Every structure is written in structure tokens, then in C-alpha cells.
Length: 280
Image (tube, rainbow, N blue to C red; front, side):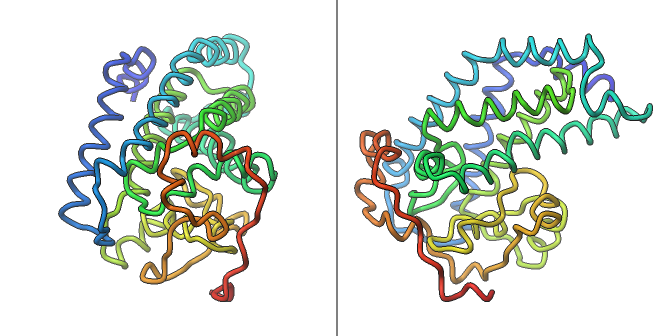
């Protein structure tokens, strides 16, 4: 465990890039072998806007990385934060609790707030208006949302008290899970269901991308599914019933244009309608 901590404490930028690019490449190939839906689309053309927003996220996160490092070093030096106030525990448990809590503040809470605050929902809308959800969708976030997510992660670092090694472990897992849970892959239902009791599975997250409420406002988790289960935001919908997108923003051509997506947060607010499948 100490060797893992030492590695992530100084993980090279090249290795972080390999995790990002390697993950996309792996799930891209897996989508061809085990597709959930047989989309009729030009995969590279569909990926262009998603790759554009992946790059803007990278620029923002790398540009602000020094703030994250300074914050993580400060909480470590000052013994500040939740995990530093807990009794002495094995290193593996220290890492697990740190990642678990960062996942709550940096992912679940940020995601929940984005759905409940109208201006933030309009920013987050860019992620939801992909009509062909695949592994590239995982990084499809408006630059303003990337900044918002960074602020929530920074808040989590202070509150949880995580050193930079645990922050890097969390961010690496976060990237891989975003690619996995958005990937257009079909796992056996029983296996997917078993995974979803503790971790976010592909089917579980794709319910969140259903085009209508209440499913759009459910399953906010990124790595761990326990937050949705504990806080009452978990929902189930059979994957055969999934329809991607947002019903009140149905223009697929606009939702595939980089320029239109950059302008999307400034459109008139229009809330998704309640699905007739709400009882599920």
C-alpha cells in the first residue's frame, strides 16, 4: 500500500494521460465487441465534440492542479480534515475512506446540486444532450462545469483532509469509471446488478441518461453507488426502455455542434417532463 501511495504522490502527467487515453481506447474497442445498442452513427464524427470537451476539461484541471496540490499539502501539514480526525487505522482503510468521501463531495454532491439549481442544470445540460451515449460521453462537460466540479473537489479535499496521493487515486478512478459507466457495453444483467450494490455499474448510470424525469434526477454516483442507495436517489429502469438525451432539447444536430453546445447553458430553462414510467 505504501508503494501505491508513493507512486500516486508523484504520478507523472504522462501516466495520467495514459490512463485517460488508454481507458477511452479500451472501452471504444469493447463497445464494438459487446454493444448495448447498435447505434447507426459515424462514431468518430460523434466523438469530435466530446473529445473537444475532454480537452477543455484537461486544460482546466491541469491549469488549476497547483491549487489542488497546495490544498492537499496544507491539510496534511496541519492534520486537518475528517480522515485526519479519525482513530489510527490500516493504510488501506485510510485510502478507501478518503476516496469514498472525495467521491461524495467531488462527484455525487456536485452532480446532485447541478440537477437542482437551474443555472447549473443548464450548464450540465451539455453532458445530457448526447443522444448516443458511449465512452466518449463520460468527458463531455462544458468548461464552466469543469470549473464547478473542480471547486467541489477542492472543497472535498479541505473537508476530508486528503493528501495529494489519495486525490490522485480518486481522480484516476473517477476518469476510468466515467469511461466505463458511459461505455456502450452490455454486461450480463446479473453481473451488472451485483456490481451496482457497491459500485456504479454501466446500466445503473445509463438510467441517469434517460431522457425524462424522474430517471434524469437519479443515480448521481460516479464511483460508489452507496451514496445513491443511502440518500434515496437510486432508481431502476430496464435498459431496453432507455432513451438518451433530454426530451425538451431534442435537436440532435444542435446537440452535436461544438458552437451550439458552448451556447447551450444560455438558452431558456426548460425542465424535462415526468415520465409515465415514474412508478418504476
